[in-house]
Image (cartoon, rainbow, N blue to C red; front, side, top):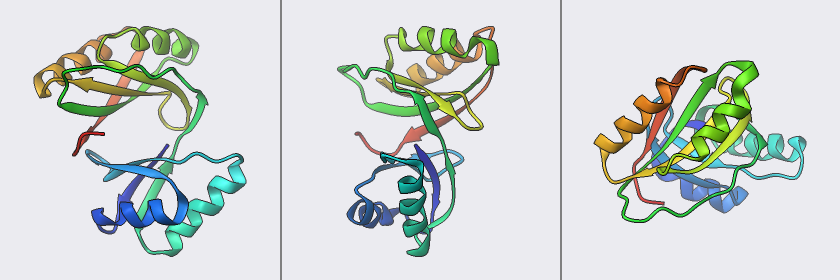
Length: 154
C-alpha cells in the first residue's frame, strides 16, 4: 500500500496507466491509497520513483503487507474506508484476527511501517463508520488509528 499526497487528484488515472497500480482518492491525512503490487522491493521502488519523476505526487508513505488477509464481500453499503491501526507489538496478530471478524471489515492486513494493520471497511454511512472506529479504538491493545474515507465507491 502506498499512501500519497497527490499534486492533482485526477492523476490517479495516469499513475494506473504508467504502473498498473490501482488507486482511490481518500479523505484524511493522505489524498490517495494506491494498491501497489510488485514482485520485489526493488520493482516497487522503481515504480514509485517513476511516479515521482512524473511530478504527480508530493510525498508518499509506503506500507508493505507482511501478511495478506482474506477479502470478503459486504452488501448494502455506501461508505468505504481504510483504517490504519497502531497496536501493541506483542498483540498485532491477535488484533488483526479480531478485526477480520468484524462484520464491517472486508479485509485486514498486517503491515511493515508506522502502522501495524490496515483495515478495509464497508458500512452503510458515516455513523456506522464512527461505531467501527470506536470499537477498534476501545480494544485494549490498540494505541491509535488513522481513518481514510474513500471519496468514491470501489
